[in-house]
Length: 218
Image (cartoon, rainbow, N blue to C red):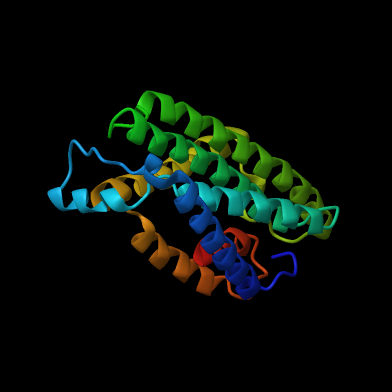
């Protein structure tokens, strides 16, 4: 993770997110309380006192982490770029979620319709896959010169790489949406997943350790 200690990143993420949450809660006040819920279990009505839209905090954290890591990235083929790309793509989709939350407060509990959200998810996913493909193209040149075996994504043809990658991207995003819709708040399940990922990438040498550490700290 670009030489960054995952514990330091997670700790910094936790402290910054706590400060940002206090600021968000203070300045939004009653303005981001979802008072209407037209479907779902009745006990979810108790969550009306919890301000919605706090996902904007993780968006800010991911953007800042990506910018900081980008300034620390060495020129040339560096796997840390993957983590940076994932941070920024996740931030874009998180911003879409904030717009959805805002509409749930101002318009109704339905929020953004799927016909508006899905195209944004597809465009962001294709953009992420394009960035990854440029990285893999550079890796392919290095690997071919060294004679080492290449992992599948590096040599995958574009007509297979993009559909499979987009399928995984949309599946992960909407799997989280379904879970959030059933539970009402995604924090508990997300914490379990990110804790496992964070532990698996604890050495910090994996490119995805950066977004995992940011999310775990949040």
